[in-house]
Image (cartoon, rainbow, N blue to C red; front, side, top):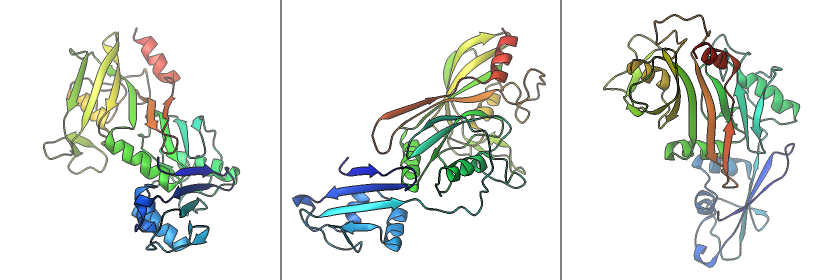
Length: 310
């Protein structure tokens, strides 16, 4: 990285970016330094411009100011943000990983990520907002990805706009990896394969998805890791992140997830939800460049299901 950054502690929520201008940079603008050396988006740069949070040689500066060799450009990101839509609600959160820039939670079944309709208080976002405020921090809730209501496991949240943008970009470039464990009806004949079938919204429904030639590209890699009685444990790796992607693809290959009432008509009393769990997330830390891998063990209801099918 071409810049230095400094984290100044949880309560202040400041992240300081510092760049010393080289001779090759002569003639560039402050905006160019922010965009190309710090990797800030146009949206973030507009925020800096509005709040006056960029300095050159310790003095406030305009975005179009020309820099010269030896100048020091600094940007402090302050994360005192208010969220009018997320009410803080005490909740027992299981934290899998946390640092100054990201937090990963272990999501239980029966809960959604963000307030929606009647679910305005019993969401992961409500619990996380309460946790943030209990630490003296005012910030928005920024999930990097989503999980269905009854899908369990790792869910990552960014603590600021910069980190959220970087992790979202990694999802597009393939540097943000997600692995799921699912238990399906039957066992695929091919023990390892790729499901490459486009997915679109089903006509007349706001919830259901289906495979359709006019849909968005959707690619799922699967591998059978254990054969059970009329069932199998599979690992899934996603190249894309379409809504209900794994569930739709499993149905399409004739091996729907056990307990999936939307995409399977096979009843079961062994589990009260679709047997799908986000067991691993791996990404490159946007600031340190280190590989971060977060694991969530298989939850009890899926372990009980697996044991019942041995």
